[in-house]
Structure formats: structure tokens, C-alpha cells
Image (tube, helix red, strand yellow):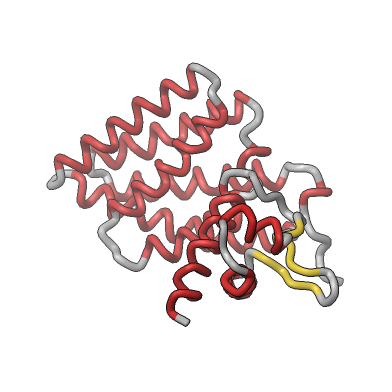
Length: 223
């Protein structure tokens, strides 16, 4: 039983990562036979993984239709970003409070900043999307709060299904990078209040970018 649970978590994380990197799209059906073949696992762990992801809200299971990556309505997106703004703003604040006494942290942030600037210059969208994830993950990690990573990771996975589409325009990347520079500058200077404010503004802009995507990408609003 423990082995099934452990394998199920490997399968669940593979599906989460597929959503984050655009391999799985909203509304896409999860075919058990394909997953078992791809990951070389039995059906038991795959079914358990799908149940877990349904409990997380990432997957929906319909009678006689199987499991699909859940589509979010615009109201869902607004609600998720509302929570994400608060939590990631807090993470940026805490990271700024820690950075002055942690030279290793400061070095990591500066290195990431250079990599993001380079990918923006090169208009490397795929690389930038990955670095954008690294940016948010690093600040959460640097917050020093042991509960924030799990809370924020679930929120990020829910909304990252839109990320590739919202950043396909190079001008969107340039705007996003400008936000990142302001946040990292405040963090590196230990300005906690400015770091939180800049992060919250950035999350709101990201939300607005997603909400401008085509209506077909969203689930209908409940009647």
C-alpha cells in the first residue's frame, strides 16, 4: 500500500509538471493507458494519482467520461489570484527581511536576475517561462516560512496552465521582466514594504494578462 501511495505521488507530480510546462492543457483528457505506458507504472497508482489531483482541484472526473484537466472559469481565476497576491506578497516581504543577513541568498537572486535579463533580450519565451517559475519559487523558498511553499505551489500550478499563452508576446515578457527587476531590487536592498507592494502589483498584472485570453480557454460561469 505504501508503495502504491509513493508511486501515485510520482505520477501526480508528473501530471502537475505537465500542466506547468504546457504538456497538458485545460480540458485535456487523461488517458490511463497512456500514462501507465509513459511512466511504466500500473493502473492502481495512476488512479490514485488522479483521485489526489481531483481533490486538489487540478483534475475533474466525470461519470462515463473519465478524468480531464479542469478548466477554470474567470471567477475561479480571480479567486486564485486574490489569494496568490496575498501569499506571494508576504513571501517577497519576508525574503527582503532575510536577504541582508544571507549572502548566499543574495548571490542566488543576482544570478537569477542576470539569467532573466538575458532570456528577455534573446526573446527566449520557453526559457523565460521556466525562469519565471524559478523566480517565484526562489522568493518563496527565501521567505523562511516553512508553510508557504506548499500553499503557493498549489496556487501556481492551478494558474500556470495559462502561462505559455499569456507570455507568447515578447512585449508581455518585457513588462513582466520590468516587474521582476523592481521586486528583486527591493528584496536585495532589504526594503520589505516595497518588495511586498511590487510583488502584489506584479501578481495583479499577471492576473489581468490571463483574463485577457480568449473566452474559449475558460470554463463557463455557473448559472
